Image (cartoon, rainbow, N blue to C red; front, side, top):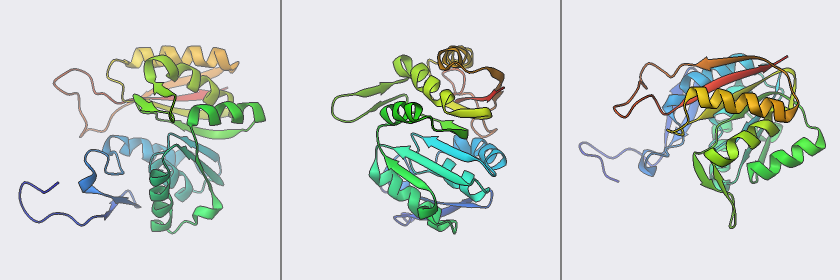
Length: 225
């Protein structure tokens, strides 16, 4: 699409955020490759990920993965069904002087990948769970926050090492913070883990409540005992 005024932007721009660099495409509609409402959460991941094995689910263009790897995570695993998004993620790694080959990228359905990882007994110190409110999982399956978030959160919590953290995010407008916390408590019980703390995370100051009610993005940091 053409701009309302001025010259159109280049097909791809490299933007900076807190010392990190991300390629974005302003002509791709709302999915530019970087969601600004997650800026504070990326900063949180940068503070938490040092020395960890980090898992980024529904990774999209891997901005959380870049934040983790740049802060010294010993390994970052990114899972998403869309290969073009993962390719942009690898490019973002390179834009930050990171070698994508030192980390892992899986083009897979996150729901099925999580189930297999749980059966394999994989362990992570930090997991990021930021799924779409609704999306396809291939030709025959879909993901719906109302129906599937709790089960996916349970599998994600089951992968955490003792003291590990889950950054749980949703942009589903009908899911309140209270409902998200309740879903996560139930997921913890289903996973057989003991939750030590749940902390609501604020949205950035430049992403306030909208005219239709509370801000769509809700985030909770879950810490295991």
